[in-house]
Image (cartoon, rainbow, N blue to C red; front, side):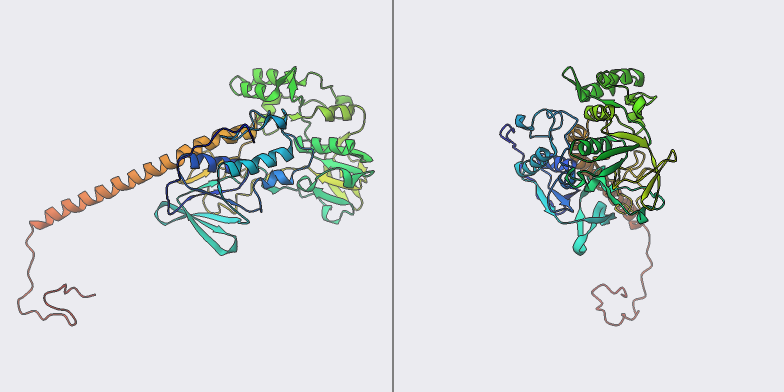
Length: 435
């Protein structure tokens, strides 16, 4: 990381209760580094044995669809040697160096099961090994791809072939010569289908429920990410037209079972169906190396039943069916989640922050970097505001007590008879109020 800029953060102030950051992925590391830059102690809790665990587990073929320049985290640019489109392996190396460069306080092998408010505006974290941690604030950075999701397909558990979620796929070597069905035409499914076809699988089919927009990463040197950034600032219709420019050179695959969606790329992204940057897939579909088929409806013995009634018998099924956020148990009882399981924008809890729970069309890493700076500014500011509010309330209570005391000081108080017996166990010259 020779082209990193010097980091001159102030020494973190001593805090009895640190800010806990749950998750050692790009979002968690970026927030921790930004907090350190503000002199706030942050402790990153990572359930795996190393940072960037999700990226370490992704398939070997994976490359970012966002440019190197706009995928770096605050304080450390990505080296030029990574090329324009950073590979999975290089990103993992970058995250390791990032944590080292910023001297982040990271505890691995600790999984947080639940977060709940604690006494005195603090937060309690129930973690593995019976740990009970107390933080002045908590940043949840467990990420978009937390828990692999599998649909409840009838008959799947009795199916006789090889079945796995895409999170367990690494490369095409185990499937050489096999008939493989990839389920799901999102970015991961399209990438895996292309990897299998180019890696020696005997036959590759791609089960498609909702056809994606296939776009180029860049067109005439202009990155699709840059167009997506511009698209956020203009009406949806113009944004769709702008992003469609990156469809130049991508053939119409309707005759091959992969029609173009009726909506535009940006409109689709806002509805949760972002475009797929997979020019390689388009070429493979066109020459028949990847065959689009209907969506999967059920499993029956050795067969897979498709939505159009067709039955096929692949050797292996790889489900690129996405992930869930996994926040329900972590935030149980706090009523902070939207119906889709992401943090609701309409509710909040003082001292609890979230990062990395969007899927922006112009690049997740770029947004994580920007969000880290905002969160790092907000935490000490919100804490100071809370302390001022508490001090003001205490002062008001003190003044109210003082006014009450002044009022009572002018009242006549009946004195006890002089010959009243002293209560047992007390001394007349000391407090004689019974316990």
